[in-house]
Image 1 (cartoon, rainbow, N blue to C red):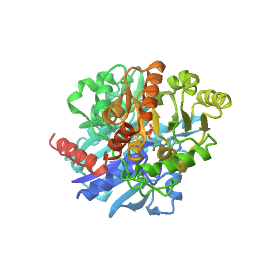
Image 2 (cartoon, rainbow, N blue to C red):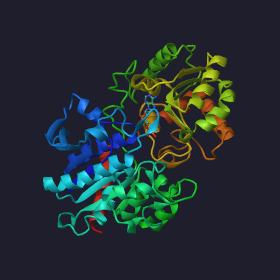
Image 3 (tube, rainbow, N blue to C red):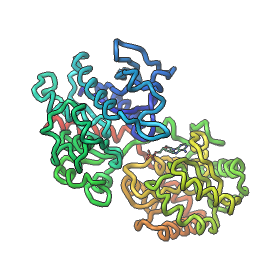
Length: 463
Ligand code: ADP
């Protein structure tokens, strides 16, 4: 099949979150399985500054690079729109012209495919930034012969971000006002691009089975539950893979000592070093809890903040790495002052420290309120660190009582109960080893997820 991945970010060219990991790794796995793939993304400053792989000018407005064996990555260039420090915004918030920027990206992507003569079977779009592609295909390009056999799959990575814009901006899209109605692009008198993507794509998926069901409910749908319910036969869930060339304690150069499930005892050297660099007492028997996360309510920091004082009184140590809401920064900073021998706080983005926390912790705390897929729990499994999670989305699909700790009522009390249970389990060395080994042997490879995507592409083609 000929497949286009159209996305607003992809590793190694530009990244703000998990979306970039998916859009960088999935094409490689698809290529290994014999598919012909290209990527199209905006030509941000970050991409043009990259040395390896280099990005070269192909022609006016288009640059090119290559990943994998033979995957062309095309960049839609526009100095005014994309030569900026951020992808979607900077300190003061989102860029005001995001609708101009990403509608431009979508229009130019469709023009580029025609120029290249790339007759795609599937254009795989991701999140609202590329959702105008299926919308344009079924409207502006509806009569275009070149696209008559092209189908679209729309992947929702996080339904909390929908691309909402004032109605006054609608003329910028070049679409007829006929599509500005409650069944299509309108949402409470605003333009909702994600909603349009849901309506106009041939198939839709999210990044885990459970999340694909959750977003069809009021609790998790962020207002999109109605439109998704109407298309529920077209909504699927495929869990993301994990890139084991980066996340494997046997080959990881960033951690203090490498190890595998064959010698999980070597993991202890990492714990000891982590305690040292974190300025915590070096103690083998005290369970060390790790957090690597955006400090946001979505990630469970409302209940963590509520319970942190109580948590710090338990027999444990806590190493936190993350940035985010200033209110959580402040609460945690106060706790460090109060419990300096219990908490180590690192308010920054630090990839090396993240690796060291996954390797050195006994328990990984990830009590997300909602979690489309989640990478942290998958990484923890591989590093022999038992995840402790709230039962939601991708966390519910990957963590259970046999390989970690799960609580199913979202509250501070239930979180603390689960932590106490984990501390108790940690003291039973034989059982703990068994639990940890179960996680270490799990395999969330991209090869498996790519197979499922190919099945979805085939299904879309059959539509
Ligand atoms: P999301 O994409 O919603 O933030 P995921 O769990 O899917 O959450 O992925 C987050 C990724 O970012 C993980 O690989 C995690 O280790 C990493 N990460 C998050 N915060 C930091 C940080 N402060 N420093 C280093 N890595 C981080």
